[in-house]
Image (cartoon, rainbow, N blue to C red; front, side, top):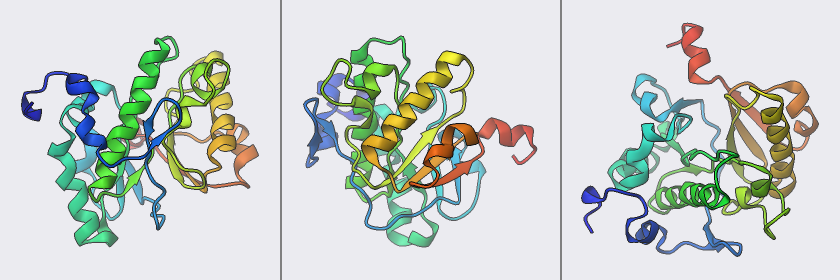
Length: 235
């Protein structure tokens, strides 16, 4: 099927051509985004739809927006590949970095949907990495079934990411309620224990009480979210 005619991301079985050559993690077979040979810490992180409004070297493009804002990347990722591949190959010192898509993991969504969005995150990330882009895995967890072994024998939210690597997380909107705060803190603890990352990029506020226990075990780098920047008059 021609990708340009594809109407849904589940056509052809979740686009198996994207994971050709991938290694898979766990019982669920989540594609693995490999740890890079060299860590590149972004100078900035900007949302996908705002990526052409910011100039600079080593800017990372993240997907901290509603899923419909970047649905084209999920449906036809090949249309955006050259944008990220060429910069890292030709001018690595000015590379545009790619954070794997932050597909929503709503806690009230069926577990199957949450697992599918973890799979889609890693699939797109692997595809870009396998084709020459510099990829940083985005970690997102939903309810406790995704970041504990309460139901499944593995922590789904962290599959497909190697230990001792560089990862990205988003905090914007994660502390609206007491329940939000509980799950964010519990998921963060599970991530640090499971992945033992060396570098954690934080898009959004970085509460010292929440992150304090982990500051000695990894390098944390915080970036203001777009809304905060706009209100502050940066863009």
